[in-house]
Image 1 (tube, rainbow, N blue to C red):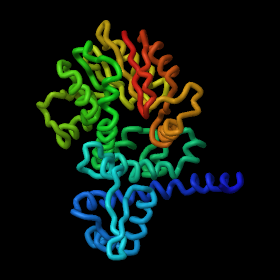
Image 2 (image 1 turned 120 degrees about the horizontal axis):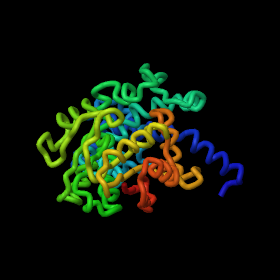
Image 3 (image 1 turned 90 degrees about the vertical axis):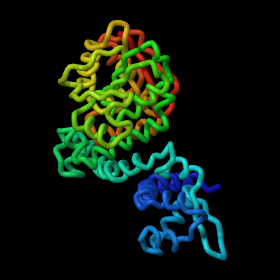
Image 4 (image 1 turned 30 degrees about the vertical axis):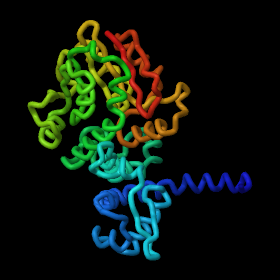
Length: 345
C-alpha cells in the first residue's frame, strides 16, 4: 500500500483520465466490437476482429486490450495468441440484441452529451446549456438543440428506451397504479415506459402525449405501430390542452426545466387532472443536502450543459408539487438510480 501522497495522486490520475475510459467504451460500441463478438461462435483474435470491422490491426489490438482491462472483454490465450470474448457485463448491456441493451444510450452519450461536456466550464460561467458552442444551434431553444436533426431525435428516443428497459418496470411498480384507469405519459417519447406501465396494469388506458414530430417518429420507427395498445397524442404540454386523465406520468421531464417552468407545467397538470387523480414524478433524486449521490450530481451538471434544468432533492419536488395544489405526496423510497414520487389532487 502506497503512501497517502501516492494514493492521493493515484486518485487524481484516475479522475483526470476518466474521459479516456468513457471514450474506450464509446469507441468500442460505435465500432460494433461487442455485437461482433456476440455473433462469433468462439473468441476472436485482434486480427480477426480488425478484418471483420475494417479497422487497423494495431488500433484494434490496443482497444481490445483496454476493454479487457476495464472488464468489458475476457481474454484467453490460443496458440500463444490472445482471443477476446464478451464478459457477462457486455453481453447484458452492450450487445444490441440483449433485452437490457444500453447501446443506444451509450451512443447518445458519446456522440452528443460528451461533446457538450467539453464546454462545462463555459456552462458554469454562463449558467446555460452549451449546444450553441458544441453544435452551432441556438442555446436558448431547447428543442432545437435536443432535436437538431431527425437522426438526433431518434438517437435520443432510443436512448430513453434503453433506460426504461432496465428501470421502467421497477419504477412503475413502486406504487399501485391500478386505481388510475386512465393514464397519460407526458413527454413519453416512444412509449417505452408507457408499455412497462401497461404490462403491469393491463386494465388501464395509457396515452403518450408528446411533440408532433416525436409522435410521428414513435409511430414510424418504434413498435408496436399505430393501433397498438398505447395511444399517442401530439401537442406541446406547455401550450396545448392536456388530455384529461386520472394519472399523469412525468418521467425525466421536470429535470429539463427551471423551477418556474416546472411550476407552470405542474399547474397545468393539476388543472387537467380528474378529482382524486394524481401525478407520478420519476427522476434521479439528490440527497437532502444536495451533495450526493455522485451519479445524480453528475446528471445535474449534465442538465446544465444540455438543458435548462437540474436534478433536485425530494423536498424540492415536494415543494413544487404542493405549490401546484397536489397533496398526499409520497416518496417511493427505493433510492435507486431513479425513484418515483406520487402526489394526488
